[in-house]
Structure formats: C-alpha cells, structure tokens
Image 1: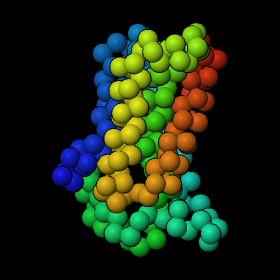
Image 2: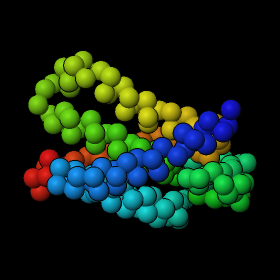
Image 3: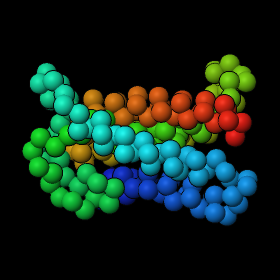
Length: 174
C-alpha cells in the first residue's frame, strides 16, 4: 500500500516535467509553462529555507517531522530521517497546490462568480482539488508530515499561486 503513496509523492516531479515538456513542444504557445516551472522550483527552495527557520519551542511539534518519518524526498529513497528534522510546510503539498490553484485561477480569471465557475467546471476543479488532497494524504500516510505541515503547505502554496497568477496578469502573459 505504501508503494502507491510513493508514486503519488512523485506528482510534483511529473508536473515539473510536464510543464517543461509543454514548453519545449511549443515555446510560443506554452510560454507560461516555463515560468510556472521556474516558479514552482523556486518556491521549493523557499520552502527549504522556511523549514530551516529557528522556530520558537512552542511550535516544535508542528515544525518537526513526525517520529519515524521515512522516504521523505521526491524519489522516496532516503529511509528514516533523523530525529528533529524540519518538515513545516510540506514541500510536496506546496508544489501541487501552486500548480492546481494557479490552473483554477487561470481558467476562472474572476470572470464569473466563484460558485458559477465551479458549477460549470466541476470536473476541472475536482481534479485539481483531488491532486492536492491525495498528495496530502500520501504525505500523511507515509508519516512524512503531520496535519499542520500539510495544511501549512496548502496555505503557503495557495498564497504563492495567487502571487504567480497576479504576476502573470501584470506582465500580460495570461
């Protein structure tokens, strides 16, 4: 059963390569894909910086990986992580959330009320929400993260997706 969650944990890598592939196939039409690719990779480095911040002792349980966390990298190959390894926020959930929330924002573009947009694009929205949810579940089941770290990844990823969306609108790429 865990092997399934190992594959699900690869979703960010699949998205990275898909964005790169789309750009290489048609750079003019898919210019935004390379920007999103670079942005998500940059956000991943920002997550690494956030994970290593000096958090107050009260936040220790939230910011450290659960005891017995294992195979926490993208390829699920690094075994049990040392005790007190930082894990807040979840980088996997952050990456998937940036991608999914940006895709929803790019399609919606605030042209309809949100409820109308969701009703007329149910499958599209559900697929992206499912990607976020299943990634969070995989990271939890694999004991890579606790609920707070997963929610932190979702909140941070949503914030970063919003910034990226508005940057793309500002520079007239969307």
